[in-house]
Length: 418
Image 1: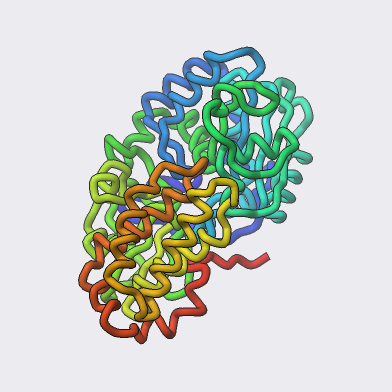
Image 2: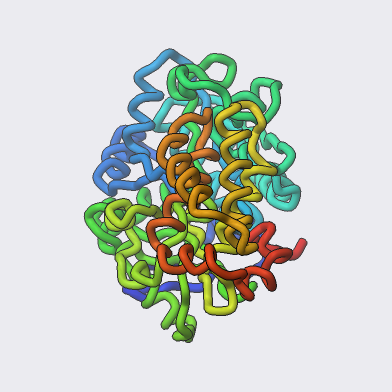
């Protein structure tokens, strides 16, 4: 029933597989009767389950805020996954839809929701979840109505207020906050929006309890997480215990080549130097290192790829794919992208880097969503983690950047078969 049994400190590769049908999921213990939502909530709180969508907010606290609001709250399973470097949500929805729906059922019981949505953009994921809903007996959902809501894929579409706007009939674009969805969301109801990987942990906690769940990971970051790891154009998905190091994960895959850096947390948490190899993969340790785990996507910058080219590619992506609603983001991402692209091309000046440093600090927090913060993270970490490399690019054109100029337009994008 769980995504995988905890395999000690060894990551577990999640291979592509056929869709798990209802009979198989029931045979593994899925959809176990829930006798007490309050008791399950206590286990979830004790387990320390944190959100897997990027913010790592404790799920129990989100549940409390929603169920303390007005009657008839709404639940949204967020599987939109607009992050180009991540595959985990699509994998869960495509291959283990009943695990996600089981978690959704349990979360709905804990908040008292009678209406829920699975919010997706991947058409195969939407079809898989729809099929799972069709094959489940109608009486199994006698206290909750579940619908699949599909949107066009976009980097900003998975932001929680964008999900609310789309479900309310508007565009899948971020909105100003407050109010936040837990205060007033879908149809102006308190709304719990939870990433599908987060929900997939709930049946595991229900079956095994909080103590078992905490037997892997760390005090700060209990359990395991799904990592999308991309190396040399190849991506894999693995379940990794929190607290493992990236060096351990790479060794598990037989990768011991020298690397120049790591793109952390998809496009959001910035570029780190090889020092990240020995930092525990947990929220607190990575925060202290000036980065983060984000959605769990990790891109390895080996010696064939220049970190400056990667930064230019990510910033160019932000400049092209931001929502276009906030002047600070629309103009700021374009300005930072232009400087780093000039740096990659050997045309930047010292004054350009001074402006980039100023923007990386001053623009943080000015957008309606996290896109601008992701862009400032890329710029700030490039300057902080690779000062010698940046200085070299001021003096001479980089051969690696020239080679990667075209292929880095969407760095470490995961390409999946249909």
